[in-house]
Length: 181
Image (tube, rainbow, N blue to C red; front, side, top):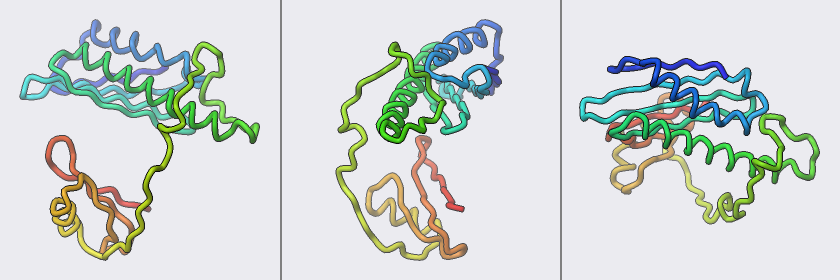
């Protein structure tokens, strides 16, 4: 893997860089394209004395992304590695189930028995479906609707672009907007 480790409000020391590479390289055993994969790591030390770690690994058939906040940078790196491993396992199970009968299995994941996992089918089961008309509105009105309903996201038709958008509440309390192309 090729690592791009950046620091915000923190100096990326050789010890931290080595720890990041050692921990994330454990994911190699799950990925067939791992030697060519680029790993983007952003380390940040916040004003509230917490450390935030963000990792993005773009792969041919998916993008692995996780973030973790902790008072200890090394603990955050450990937690994020666990998160990424769970993402890989879940996706691998989903891909295995989907392509089991077709035979044209994407080669992103290794197929060794060591990494084979058996998760409950309930993890990926859709348990509720909702259908509703998307009312045209701007993002500010969508945020007000979301807050009024007590949800952490809201799907709407953007009145300016006539496209489906999603507003969501971020962990920092501010809002994000997802625009469909």
